[in-house]
Length: 411
Image (tube, helix red, strand yellow):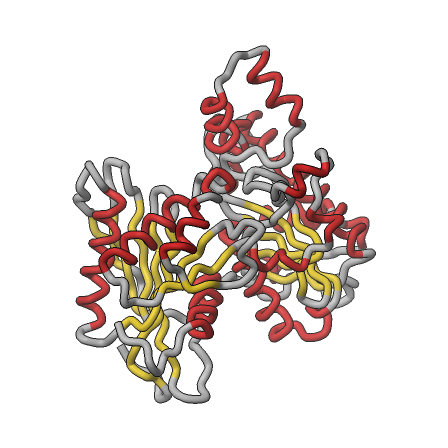
């Protein structure tokens, strides 16, 4: 690896832990008065944890990732995956040091609005939020707990996906439930905050004044949400109390009449666990299509598969409908930005969303859209339409660097 001229030779590690995968990235800590580089020096992931064919892949900056099969301990595959990452990281470091570890933690509840150094007390707090984010929270906390036990000297910083939305006005946070629910912490938190925080940095750099105005960012991946930003601050978002709310997603339902949930339990006699599994894992694009949770796959089959076509139609309609609602909240729109896996790479999904917003005067440059250009609107379009890759890992690494005395930390 070629070190930056201002490099300290040490690294910040970022861990993003999901139920079946662990992503990691190492960022070269900068020398004095230098900025943290935005590209990871080395990054990779373990996929398929708990499944029959787990894999490990990693690459240095600018190189293609290699991939290899893993044999994980079936009794504790997650711990074994973490141990494998640790071994491979130590080998790659070759004597260099990790100064701190940043963790993407989905939920900070009503207490944590900024990145925080994690100790046993903070970890205990964060475990109480597991019911609010059951797909993500337990796994990040498991990694933190393992490292607290094995490397208590290594600073760990939790970076929360809910924190960026702390600027939501109260009217956007409140749920129309008895007021006592608000006092107990039942409110709209918002998620994908690390992604939106990156957009609040990157979009003004690339697009100038328009990105400081009324902006909607569409984070479209397996999970999906929208965020309305005014002067770079979150003022409304589609995910709410949980990561089930808002847009239709790969396997999650998005916003749903609560009466439908009551019906499933009271009339169809589904248990609480069965309802939860249905809403998180069997709904969305997968549930409607019966074929796939990925728009790319459904686009390939929509001409001959009515359910694939219906799933895509509903997916696009929900995005367009929610963008329209956020435009009303903002009082207009200066920029629409697409990010995350689908948002960054699916020209057809972007085209259909933008066609649905033609009433705003929005027009696409089809050639620019086809090549995933950074600006895909026509020059005369009153709204800038952007495509901006997200970089949640860099945001987390930057927070960790701010939390930890890199000059004095040792790992």
